[in-house]
Amino acid sequence: MPLNYKHLKYFWTVAHEGSLARASEVLHVSAPALSVQIQTLEDQLGHALFDRKGRQLVINEAGRVALDYADTIFTAGQDLVGTLNGLDARARQVIRVGAIATLSRNFQVAFLKPLLQREDIDIIVRSDGLNVLLEELEALQVDVVLVNSPPTVSHDMPWLAHLIDDQPVSLVGSPERVRPDDDVRELIASQPLILPSTATGIRNSFDAWLDREGLKPRIVAEVDDMAMIRLLTRADHGVAVVPPIVVRDELDSGRLVEAEHFDALRETFYAITLKRRFENPLVRAVLDEHYKSDQSSSA
Image (tube, rainbow, N blue to C red; front, top):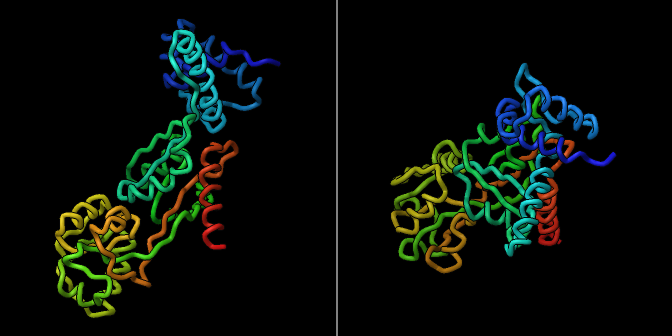
């Protein structure tokens, strides 16, 4: 049976408006009639598109997939009108990415690089706390969450933690403060330190290393934002304990110098997805690109 686009338009409007009542006002169709038409669409597709919670409709996984297609279909209709009126427009795919607020921007760009050159994709990136982003992942409001430590897996919420990168942590500073052959213990004893906050895995491991070495450094800043650590280090306020990817541009240009890797300290980067029946194909595409890259570099 061919798809009834009027029913799809009704579903699309309800999904975007967030309720039957508001969609009813927009479409000038009664709420009971809308409900019947959406039920007909669900019967045709073979999947419920909303979870009914009392009087509230909550879009589910199948509904999110249908909404992405509906967005493409109705955007294509708008593009048709625009194209025939002399505008250059095309329907686009969408990937929604959440990143914890403290995550390296360089890592985020590196993760998205396989998609950045494509002209048919809209990439939506937002930053927030881990718990908020995981709730949005569960609600299908984002497709993937980028973190530097995997969440706890439970039977109720089966996260998939894809290891994207793993790299040593370094002591980094200006050429005036750091030379590549400097002894890291002497640097830590003599130079002011810029450190990640105590809430990070890097900081906990570094503090344990300091305790084993019997070192008591002078700490000038404790920051939970890697971008701020980068700025403070560039401004030469001290030497920083960071993953090299955070300051990759400065290391390449010689503005900053890397003193030493801490063998016991490593930063890991993960892409967190949810087990879904209908996966966003762009997430699979970008993960596959990273897996291919890892296999080529290890070959």
